[in-house]
Image (cartoon, rainbow, N blue to C red; front, side, top):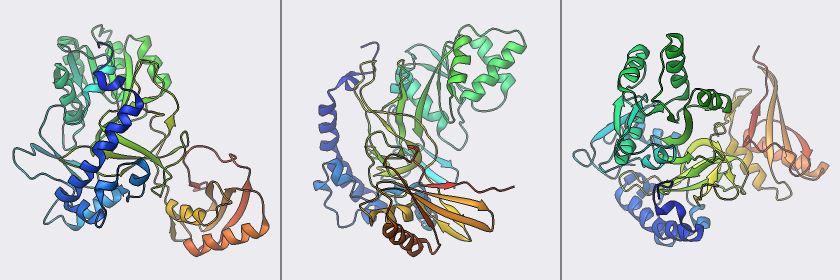
Length: 414
């Protein structure tokens, strides 16, 4: 088992799915009874019957904007907006703040955010020293990775952000085996070491997150003896997916149930199509149900060459919130999705906003057989939904890019 964190990673996909579907109703009932927000969101729903992905897809998506709105509304009585199932004290060692401000509770327990699995896949092992350059201030990033490292049996140097010279000095003197943090800061550290003609021979691996990690930077690190891997985690749900030695997408964590939905909706998209990442967690302390991360990704077909059998995603492909303002009116992806649902003849659509500010033009590109009467009906539906006029252009099925965009702002802001 040295190449895999545990036997869960090697389960037959059907066994994993059966386990997730068996656990789902229990978690939904718990969220409904223990978290006041979900008592409201799931009101009238018999959670015991939600034991399939199709049934799950009928439940509302709770996006970060919804979470923030509830927290702000209930700030005086409950800073978590009714989403936390635990109270302050030993059950809640820490509270964190993310931009917004959104407050997140940390529950007690070993490897609370489940990041040991990602660290293991990146080559970290018990007894090693991990240099952690994620923030320990306000946000949970530093603790998210530290808790996983401790669960693996590693020692952690809590470098945090900034103070580059001091962090580099610690690396030279403590000789860590690996680094966790953003890829850009690791490059800064390594460049400063090279400029001073200092070597970091002990540093051979890195688990990176928080920003894009392009192949060019991966290769740059590898040329200098550091094998960098990515993980995808959030302060809300913890680890979602992680990279393996195969470097073919990111493998889902065993503790989440992931869906990819069309931006602005809760409707799952076909495998391979880019959409918004929606996650249901099995965390009893903070039981988020169909939590819309706002991130775009897509399911990769097939299994990981490393033998891990869980679903893979392509990684972070951008943001799903494409709301834009046209002639003083906000236009949302959900409005375009609602229009499309009225026309079964149409497969996908993309609203392109062009022109200059104060001279906006909207064109809806629709995957369908060209039909003048259909174009008129769709244009009327768009105007009804958005209160704005829109031209209709038909493209062949499959003619739109598979990038998750529902609204493209192509205006000139010069």
